[in-house]
Image (cartoon, rainbow, N blue to C red; front, side):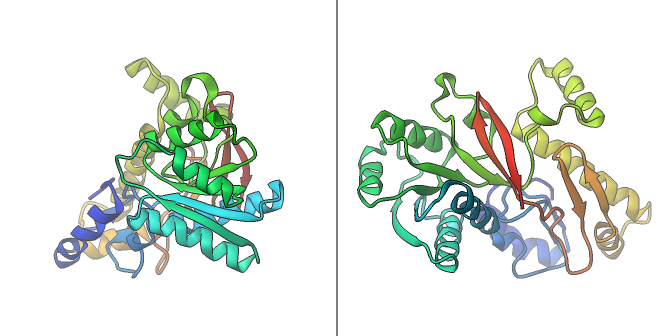
Length: 283
């Protein structure tokens, strides 16, 4: 299985995969449960939500003087992981985890929640909502005049659609993810060639989903090539654990190994500037 969507959906199917020896490759979720507990059939592509939000908050502490950390999240596996990461890094750095609000997946009115978080003194909000909700929450904060707060998302919020909202309503938002946006990397010949071919075929610049799909396809093809024509469960596992290569599409180094089924370890922090995600740091 490749590119399966969502933390709870992946976790639910794990017993079936394990019983049949079916590998789970580059799921479209980076919840910690996707690798923990370790298993021969689990292969994540990038860093976890938990590690991403910890790195993102740490960056804002160092570079923006963040002291009062808060969270807005849907109380799902994904949301709880983001909130836990924000709370844990706050504790480790001796910061104040000041407040949090939880939300329904279909919620669209955030005035009350943001008013509460503002009154509680939040200067940084770790956000774990759906894409439309993220956009609405950030826009609402500006609408009510709350401009001295930073929003930090994870890879789940690191999406072209969030950056390119008309009117720049999401400008200034941060995200901490496991890959880099393509805009600043178009001097890479491999990336530029792929972007050109994608634009020729679709008439559009590749969005986030296209990057992740292309990257996962390369990962799977490389593993199958390394395993050879006599494919078995053992030969595929050995092939996956032998992979080490630069992923030119995501802008990261992939390195799997025995006991290490996370392809890329780097965490890339980006900020929305003039409708694009611009990389500001790597950890």
